[in-house]
Image 1: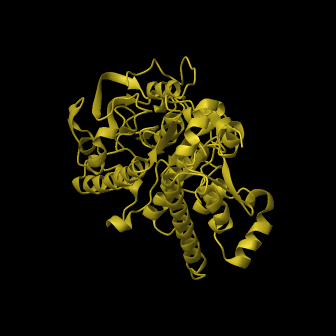
Image 2: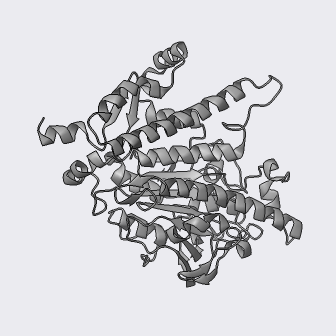
Image 3: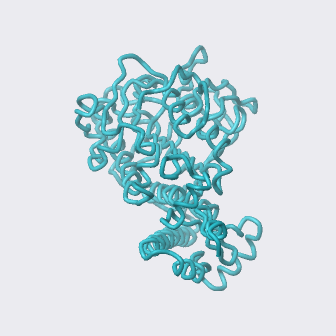
Length: 452
């Protein structure tokens, strides 16, 4: 076999193929040289791709509890951000970003809808409850349009709240604004997928979309997992690679199998619910496990280079879900309008910490996954934030924004960046686009790039 044939067979974008299944592979040493020579993944000097993701949790934060003490590299994590202690050198916390296009600008109430719609677009949404919606192309979709041909999926949109695509929601704004942060065009949002099973099959089930009935019947007949279809192919591939790469494949297949089993377990629970009991709003039953499944799927999507662009709307703006597992029965949105009530503020701090814990867990997953000369987090740009800072006042100034990852080693991390004057958050997005190799003079209401 000549080198070109070998590179073709063992391409970084190659797949293990089984019956009705297409399983992407994680980054292996055997793939690195061929990919870099082909220029397919030449985003970093070593030929490793960059990823970007945007994680959104709604209703603002208790900013006094969020904001770090100190500036630059000499800073202390705040109580809310304490879960990022082991990741301190891998993150940047920003103070001073604003989302001006989420402000009213004469349109009156509707701050939650505007916060969602403007956060990744930098555009002021048209106030309408009809079909004539208009916002703007979001940063993730601008990136996906130019990078999507390099991966199996151009982008991945995840959520935990079922999308409302019609009707009136926030003070005369269409529900579409409130339930979407990703926009393919100014008039076409990209609805988030909330069902982990459907995300899993989108990532790993090549044949399911075109032949779902046949595949489902076979799965039911043999009661086998997707991975059982490709075990022989995996064994064959392992004969051609190093023992270190073989261990990576074993670990990867185990993680995928465990995730599928968790999804199946959740589905069984949901199916077994008594007729008089309302089905859980999502899969699985608990919100924390739902978040974790979605984060695990995003991790696998990045690990296999199935996509390099993702968004996760962890909850839509004005979400009023309760957090009974945290001992909080009141609705989240209700609490966010605390009117300086100390008891409500303390409960909000618990919720803020909850979201920080889950995001920190995800970043730790990325950091724990070796890739090239570093790890997945090193080669990523992960934005965690919200289009509102103070939920009580619906303020769009001094947004809570944390960014994880080193952008392939080009970013100075381990710092708290506090701007002397308000800066459009779209300046961050423009900087990220440039890091991804996308030539853009501006984005949304940006005024320039950042020194990262």
